[in-house]
Image 1 (cartoon, rainbow, N blue to C red):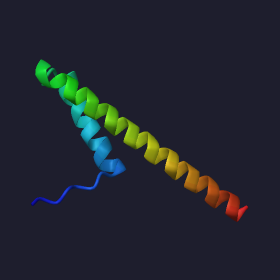
Image 2: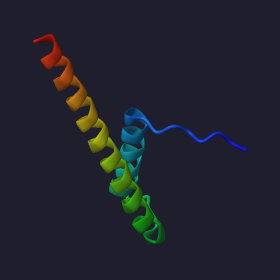
Image 3: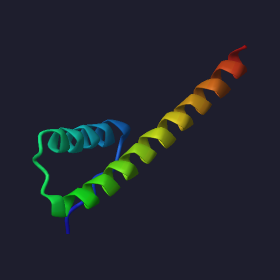
Length: 66
């Protein structure tokens, strides 16, 4: 059984960029477009949530130091 790759902000951003590149270069079959858009939405949501979490952690850290 293959190990499942843990999603990180960097890997999500890289995958999202790859999807965007394929769409912009008309490399996506119309039958796959819907699935790619769904995946892009998932990746975008993951990145937004990760950024919010880091921002919250930084805010807490800064308040603790202040």
